[in-house]
Length: 173
Image (tube, rainbow, N blue to C red):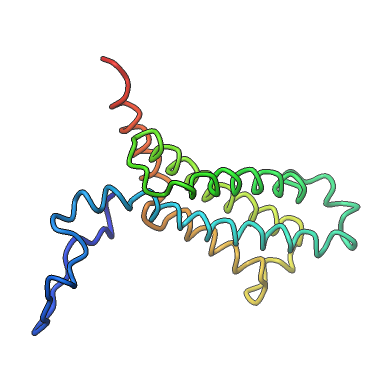
């Protein structure tokens, strides 16, 4: 989708037999697996979000009296995560669906996962306060992980661009 997309690999003195070829031509194979490949990244987002939620709960007994005034409380984040995971699990039942509508749904889930990562990790920092900002804090590490999910190919901006492009293709002129 731009940036780090790899389409070729150079090898020296490598023997590739017919049994080693996954697909020839590759384009139809890539179209078949692309949704499943993007969907795999939703699991990374889910793990980061769940970690952020768990870290919020970890300080609830100490800081809940003031954290109750923050947005993105753990129960709200958990409900959003559970909904997203449920949708991804349903899509995972047919990972090789090549329809445009299915791929748009997968791209939307991947986008929502990245955005939820950012919100949940930011919320965990706010719930922890200064101790969450320390370099050795799990909360601070999760912030960086969430930012990585947001920028790794496909980044949120690329996901939105692809969704817009695919949606425009379906619209009558």
